[in-house]
Image (tube, rainbow, N blue to C red; front, side):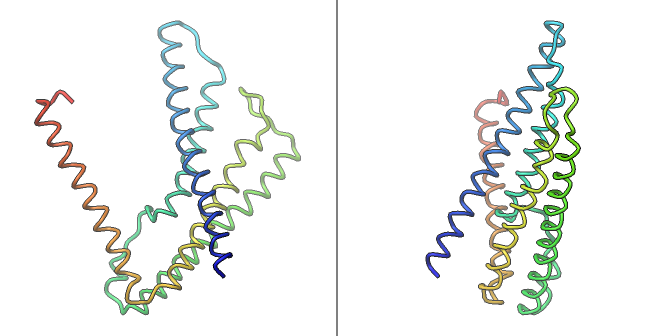
Length: 200
């Protein structure tokens, strides 16, 4: 059992690393490429013809893998007012139901994304500007949604293991911590603003 737990821990760490890396590279690369192309076009009168297409792909990959990572961090928007007003056991059941529906949806999109990918490979579609096989940019759908489904499955197991009395308390504690972090950041910014006389 402990070996199995370590195995899934390694898988989770690898998925987390992939999600963060692709999301970071995608957003940084997309911004850098878009900036370069704008400067090149308006200052030097030239631009990369394929930059627009690649920028779109980079932003898409960044957004999809960033969203998959948010499932691990529980950073997606959720409304917990109903959970706080029902008995703990009902709250736990509702959370399990919600996460199960999310898991089914993500798994379905991942599966049909894979089937669509097979069709694109069969049709040998290629992108207009980059002239690369279209299965490469479309690969983001089955992979990122599959990663998201895995993260939700982790949450389902966590909810099952957590006693009913602690399920909502944990989510409330996470919200409080997030609020404390955001207020601390605002205080730091105010101090910097005061000390620099608004120069930063």
